[in-house]
Image (cartoon, rainbow, N blue to C red; front, side):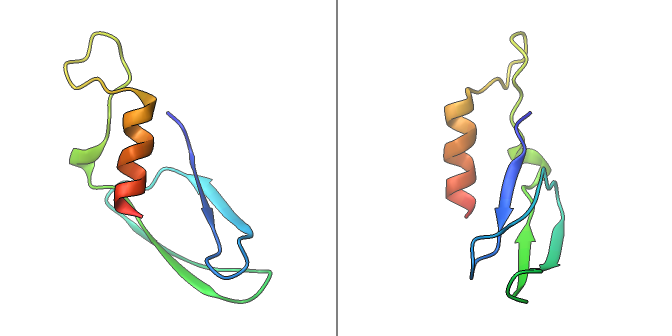
Length: 70
């Protein structure tokens, strides 16, 4: 599974990479001091990349899903 990059909304510094599932993370940027909150995907929105999985989706679908949330 691909990790998503989470960046500061003010200075665009990379804060962390990861996968957030049913969660909320608050991070303070070390560069500019901005406090940013990131929300994870609901568990139902996770996509399966296994070939034999009935819920299989392409990586393009995953990118579109991330953009819909942001």
